[in-house]
Image (tube, rainbow, N blue to C red):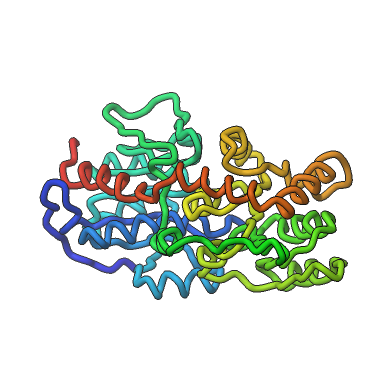
Length: 366
């Protein structure tokens, strides 16, 4: 059912007040929650500037993410995949612009929105996937959006300066000092692979961490009972303690207090760098390879190779275990990684992106 939200006056130049913005993104066990979390970061800044914002999409699961959106008071409404239906929703709601954050949404959706005179922003990861937009945001390292034909006048924002960082991440970054590692205590490690871990990365990474035989205190985030069981079945040494928890919304604070974070090479890496964490990353899909190489080559993280390489017995696993052992036993290297990451991402990317979106939405050129 479509609800008539009426209309609002356009914002004054440079202000989001009066604007209505739709954020089109989904979350599910198959695709995870990264798209919605990026939209949540934009929502926080847009709301701070006075815009009315709505999430258009399917966020039936995971349950904790749905609850988190409710706590943030972000309205969640159905987000059609059909171009004509999406335009009808946008018109009925009086939206000035729609932000698309999806790897599967048909490019006809962006074309139909623009043809209807609605400003479109596309959050992309290296490739625009033929989406037509007035504003492209590529927060992946390097931030070079790949597209053959950009619409005339389209703006492109990319790289670390435009990383979409949530308020909870900034709060963790801004707390007075990170905990100083006690050489007498085993390193505290946080291991997580997104909101749903669809590729089963956590048990694989935990196995590699335990194979270092180094003392550690490990917090593993397991998204399903099967993953919990897989982690708990792994043998440990007397100096290795493992705690398994369900996905939670307080990951930034958990990361802040960890000596090392092991995770997938997705957008959450940017959050961790902003906080100042020492991070080791794993690719879980081929689409993450370019971003993985960029952060590894820049010396911001330690690369452990692919998840499949760690899953098998061989060179990738052996090298990954050796790298993890070095990180677990060398606090100075971990501290230097954290300093480099925090120096690259200042956490103000959302304000820069929102300003560009407001400029376009309040003063559309079509």
